Image (cartoon, rainbow, N blue to C red):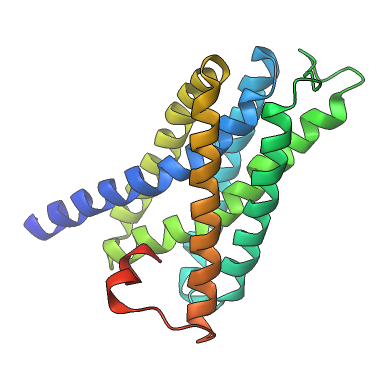
Length: 204
């Protein structure tokens, strides 16, 4: 019982750290849209996070062997980072309050961005939780559900806050850039293309 409690605490901390990255990016994507679409973008992000976490949880052992997923995921996050920079800080861009409009394509691009984010970050989250949970599958399920709940709550907060305080958007871009580089370096290290010194292992 004590071991399971310790594992649960570990999972909670893993979720808090990893869900934060996911939530910040979803919140930043959603911040570029009118309130009605903002909620829809966040819902898509939550659904995507839940679905991809289930898929990755069912194939965690296999995915551990695929280093290129991290590299591709990191590259996609770099693209999202540049796209968000243009969307959030270009005053000429306006988001329509409904999807049935001339800018419905922009709404779909927002959906694509949050789904790409979910794919990129769900893998690390699942592997982290699965590693901590060991053979306690009920704790794995609890960890994944908690992660999605944290993403939903935090993404809504970040989306609203970024809209009111633009400087937070710049901080968010730095976070996304850091996560992207982290994924790419982690994948390259898995392939032994580069060597990571022991003090920096915890960051990859």
